[in-house]
Image 1 (cartoon, chains in turn purple, cyan, orange):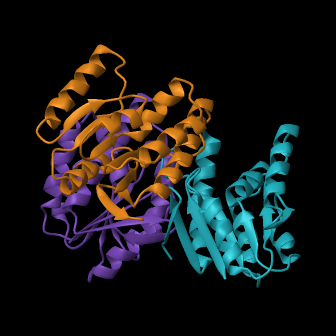
Image 2 (cartoon, each protein chain N blue to C red):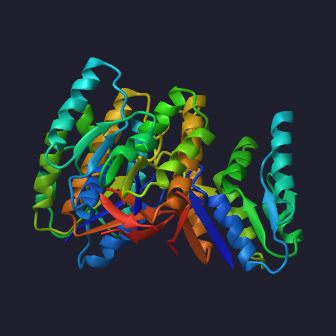
Image 3 (cartoon, rainbow over the protein chains, first blue to last red):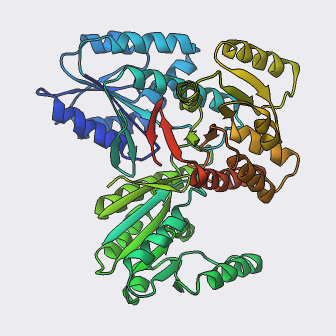
Length: 164
Length: 164
Length: 164
């Protein structure tokens, strides 16, 4: 089973995705954090979050190679989040095709996987070229992942609506 | 009964919220305007809007202390809008916790209350720090208010969908 | 029958609108491109898109006078897209009232018409005055068109939800 939670910034999508994966998983699910540690302050924040999750999740970290990392895990995996992963992939100058190929191989894994993704496409077209590229790639990948998932949930104000 | 209407800029959320509160209220409902008057031109515009509403609403104004003001009213109150109120609270350097506490006490009032809120979280993360803070707080408060409301409506292109 | 597909950037709204109009049309539908050709590079891209569509659509082009152009067509017309048209109308200094009047006369035509529109109102209010004006007009026209359409579909991540 593959599931996508999509919603805006601070829409509650992560909280709902976490509750969801715990409800479908008989063992402690894996929390795959895609954040790259940029500075000491960020590292501390992430560490604090990780401690908070310890009771409910096994945390692993991977900024780029999702398929390889997920295949190593036993049980359900929460990918938190695809938007940060896209960001990382862009930083390392990966193309859209490389991202799509990586996600295609992730989606073929046997495990239950829950993806979290920011909906970034409902503002005006950004003036900044990199931001425009991010919005474009994020939208195209969201279509691809949603088309391959069994279920898609749209989250607004902490309320999820099943749209697939 | 507590109700939230959430939607983007010019999505029609205010018009739908106004029609809704009139439909559930047996007396003339109260229109609580959260706008602070900044200059003469703005004041004139607001005055014109107020005149237009006179037939259907009793207008009262309050930029910050919603609970105190709403408790004074008889009958149903439309809070128009929470986004402007968050803006005001940020301007007076109130914290997220203070805002949440204020809304928590509003939500405990006996009256029927309808809240209007801008959905601002579905664009890219703003470069401007204040804008980022606003988006963050707005999203977290929208989750809080929605969790406490009996009904939540999402509005797009003047069409409302009940999501709770 | 009049239909609106509304969704964010790269949400898949165009692809779904194209599939939809082909499903309701017994003859080859008309693809009304509202893009103005700005430079050679853009013109080449548009030409390539046009070639890709040739098998399934008759392409016509009109940047401003939709009613006149649509009335000349036989069969169903896909307006791709209203957002670009609003952009063009703003460029030629047309007012909101002129845009609404043009769309009102389009909506009175007998033909099946499918409109595609970008949802641009769910980010923060733009600092740029022109962008603010665009968001305002786009939202107000989306309400108007939706109110006059028989069906409205909201598209997220390539999934459409019927909201009217």
